[in-house]
Image (cartoon, rainbow, N blue to C red; front, side, top):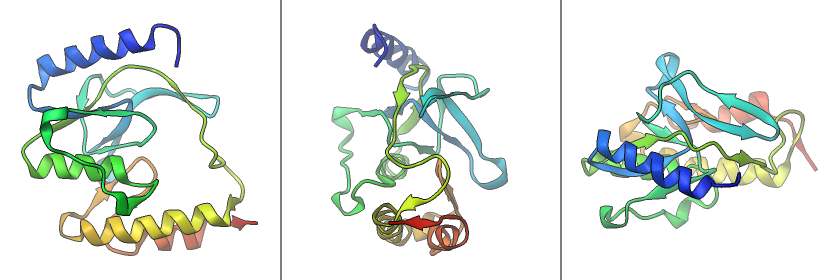
Length: 172
């Protein structure tokens, strides 16, 4: 985290709560809308590349990236252990929306150094993990699709597996 990040985060979180009093989940990167109308929101350094999206912040979102988020303690929201390492922030967003809560991206830039390569082959274990978690997520939220996450546009069950089969090369 950059120097002073914690103070910055609490300041922008307080600002977001003024705009969105039913705020239950706040993150640093997410998606507004779905499909072709989806817009990226946030300000992060992702594996050395600055992502400074044009969406004004704070803004309400329909999906969040897992890289960093906070959950309101009194919201009753919980991480679903069946999702493992993927889709759990968007799962929280969908849970929150189902309970009448709001979710937002706030402007608290941080660095994201993922072990998943930005291009080229993806370790076979990572591909298998993502596909297993996608099956859980897509099954759990089939009634709520379409959902666009920062990594996938899921219109129907099986979309993540189809994307992975067509566009991701597993490496050993």
